[in-house]
Image (cartoon, rainbow, N blue to C red):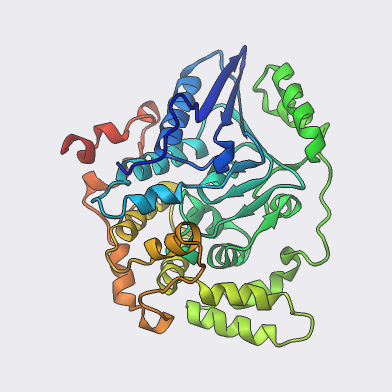
Length: 385
């Protein structure tokens, strides 16, 4: 596996058992609670243990410090670029975990304060209850660095109203707390100063009864009013442009809208879109569109193939160039290869979507009685080492 920076004795995930309540704290505040292999393993262990524990009824997850979670550990991916499949295990475990988060049997509440991006947001959106604040910032910016919208977001985004999913996936646009509730990506908005009090209230409730939990949250939540300039008020433009058949057509349509009066907001979004990896954009658009026709397990299996093919640089090394420019050298001047959309061949994009042999796919359990089967250590990847 790729080497990650590990501080001795650092507890990257805290798990507390408080009678019928279980509290998970993502505990890498200096690194904005990024998700490493250790984080994924601990989350999976806790969630499996507590789903099987009759005493555990309510699971609360939060982030330490000023972030919920900034998503995957990009440096871990970059450092593993020279070693074959160095990140395969953590990728497998994360997508397998995503399925179990979506289908979890106990009541879950995410208390989301600060940044919640990419894979980090996969610990928020699927929860029965996800509480956001005025300081919550959400985005799925993966396409811009030559990656794709993953951790079940090719499924989540594809089921958003209209073509908002394509817009969020391709542009990496940020949504605030109010917008998350309005878009259906969070359930409740609570002012940040009330979040500690809400946490105490939920712990004292000491129950996983969904109606009781909902009522408790609603004691603190407020109705959301979108700001006038919210992107969610631009639905007709987004649906018009992001319904087009290709990334090039989307950009052309968006450019046409940008020239119209009152559409000044489009300029900055368009600039970001044009600076993104052409390969990442093409893969991402297709993945979101495929997601509309796929089940959650099918989407996660597809995402695993895409991630492994991208990390293997099977058609482009853009993901490593994107991470270099963003987080290693921080020059924000990536040199994409191929450098333009027209040079990214559709036949090449087809290659990264090809199914793997059945025993090399993510093993998502189909039967209820074996729902925690399919772990990495039982797969062909682990047994063939």
